[in-house]
Image (cartoon, rainbow, N blue to C red):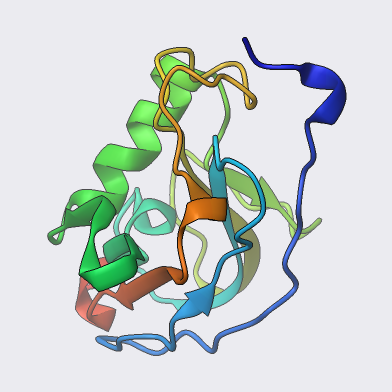
Length: 163
């Protein structure tokens, strides 16, 4: 039985610079205890044209992986539409939005043209109750691992904006 009084949320402030079609540097995840949820927050400024796709904010990740010792995968998702599917799953199953405005007044119904600042959020929850961030039905045994890394690859620029 999981004791919630020992539940801890760790926030990493490491940054990576997003560039189209790039494997970003791996991010070392904390290795204390059990990992029940991983959230990626991307503070992005997009320069969009009239050719930007309606769901451009969902299309920023090509691949996302969480790897442990010996390359063991705890999460492995890839493909041009992967971040769109993860985003929609988060909204429908977890009830949490993918897109958060930085006060720029962005419109979700149609893409803004020009420079648009926003925060895009993607969550991975391995357990059976995604609405509970400390659900311990399935966990990543971080304390038992010597390495635990998050790896992200970005999409091509044309995936978010046809121009």
